[in-house]
Length: 393
Image (cartoon, rainbow, N blue to C red; front, side, top):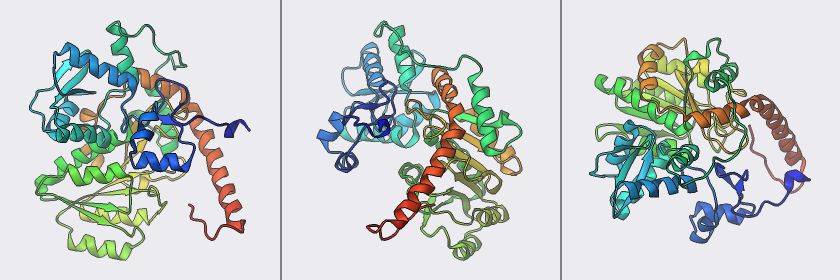
């Protein structure tokens, strides 16, 4: 079966310089990657761009270092000035970000702590330029002969993507859907806008509902101020406990972050009840349906704002990153927050938009097929004599 052909360890999937996936065919390879074993990481020719620097981006950063005449340290290339300033502050770099060939360059001191923090910022926030932007930089500098040949949408890519997502979210008007380079960038900017709106009101407590994707938690832990607090609530099904918590902390709660379902445990609590609590107490509810997709779970009526990674299903060929922000039209927070998020959100790079638009027609059929296959797989495992229990949603 071609679906189960052997893809050699470390090979990009697909075979493209813009691949965001890498073949890890054995469980030992996956464990080695998670443990950051040098022999495993060194053999990977590609990987998720927030974790592993794409070779084209690495070359563009070396070019920036040369042209900016930096003898030591490294240069990180960032999408916008706002993100560049955030990176410089987070990495404790004294240098001022500079505009360079359509990107923003941040010089990071050659100290282990500074370099590690710069890498962490890119991982958590998704601020780095994309491989296609890096390729364009190298082409303009004469360091690359021609762009990688690939199918791209030639029309209004933003309109096409928005129309598809509006259908997924059940929206009549797609114009308010905001697009950016990754799901984590989407979350970060919504988080920062909510902070800016709630802190002056003395609301400085954030609640994370359940075990969530690692970088969502890292943003909540690392980007709050000294006077702000983070509370982890492990049991997403404990509505009674949440009600009591809201009553006790009503005046200080700023926002609640809820994945629906959670990644990776697939927990799905009572989102309508949670949203009712948030409305009653003036709290912003941010929901993320990425793991199942908004085509499977309709979270928008039951939150104030939804954030979603488009890398997994909308961009379904494994070679483009993306994220979106969708405000609930019925929420009172939409008028207060949408303008600020739109102004701060890094725009999706045009070539990445064109590539995503070329793939997004496959979004709905893919979800339909994946959903059916998941049910078939669960039923098969439930009947298998070697399987004791199956956890699935």
